[in-house]
Length: 442
Ligand SMILES: Cc1cc2nc3c(=O)[nH]c(=O)nc-3n(C[C@H](O)[C@H](O)[C@H](O)COP(=O)(O)OP(=O)(O)OC[C@H]3O[C@@H](n4cnc5c(N)ncnc54)[C@H](O)[C@@H]3O)c2cc1C
Image 1 (cartoon, protein in one colour):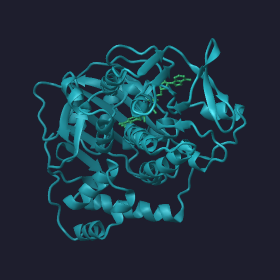
Image 2: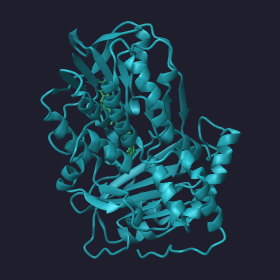
Image 3: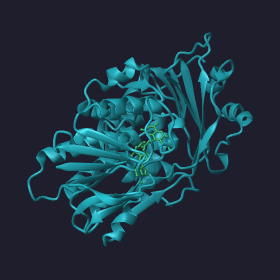
Image 4: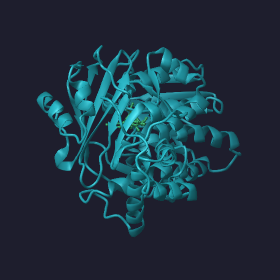
């Protein structure tokens, strides 16, 4: 039995690994020529921007690839405690910090992908076919039997196909060619822009944090930024701006933007830091979900995974983690698969729950901007937005609330867990107490 995975990035590589126990051969077809090591390539332009791998993502990858975290650390990532060592300036102020098990690897997206690629490439059942673009599918509305490649007359035969071609997936178009009805879709786009560059960490730098995150906050704070350490004693800094505040790629504007933030923490850190790269920008950040689980008449052996099924506003850093959770789910579904049952339908129904954990808070947060495409928020979303303001305020005072917020951010607990009686009590109680911490240097 042969599985063909379309796209050899995070979702594609993890899907390939997930399938190794269940098929005889996994062929990964990637449009780019994949480099050796952490080198930029055209198919993943987002790799120039800060990428945080959340706790859930790391946990799911470790399930598929034990010792991945150790490999990443050996390759140079800087491991730190997301809760204790990240200064988070949330919409209400500095979040409280304290030791937690939420470990995070400060590493470039390029490094994470290259460590993953080498691990998956080493599996004897996996073949990476690079420099080949997929241009269509072969089959009918019930079964895909192969994949068409650019400038290759004969299709590649497949018993199972996984679309992991990312945000720009053409699978809807390919399926329409086979006669499949369209899949319901939703777009919620807050029109967030990114501008990123790397810096040498100055020897004399001193602060009581390893990473600093100034969050966007509707409607009064349309500018934010994240600074985090990566391999090679470098910082990556990503600036975030909404609509008219989207940062430009002009080098002179970069520090001006940082100085315009409501806290000088990142500007102070960069005062003596030397830039190592040009400024790279992107405006491709909207939330786009394809509700494959609701579609009628989809092939039973076509799986859609990662950004190809749901791409999220990256300010919440959940894309790689949802892709990893989806790949681990694929392994579980294959294990439980019985002959003749619809693997794709079962997979996509379960994937929808994982996607919801990220989609619900992300889109509710984005809909708090009046300029967001896909709005206005429903009355229920308005309620969530108002409650979230209280939760953020609570997170500046109560460790319990901060931990609850971070658990939801890291996809360890569902968004509804913020409505647990203990969290509600701490949220309301924290309004009556003075701040516990919040002081920080830098
Ligand atoms: C600015 C920005 C910042 C981000 N920050 C974070 C973050 O902090 N944390 C996080 O978890 N996520 C982040 N993300 C999201 C993250 O990049 C994606 O969720 C993740 O890469 C999903 O991986 P994927 O494999 O689904 O898609 P991609 O990584 O986009 O990969 C798609 C692959 O398919 C290949 N491909 C495309 N078309 C074809 C074709 N026709 N034939 C063959 N191959 C094809 C491409 O070359 C590419 O290799 C960010 C995204 C952006 C834009």
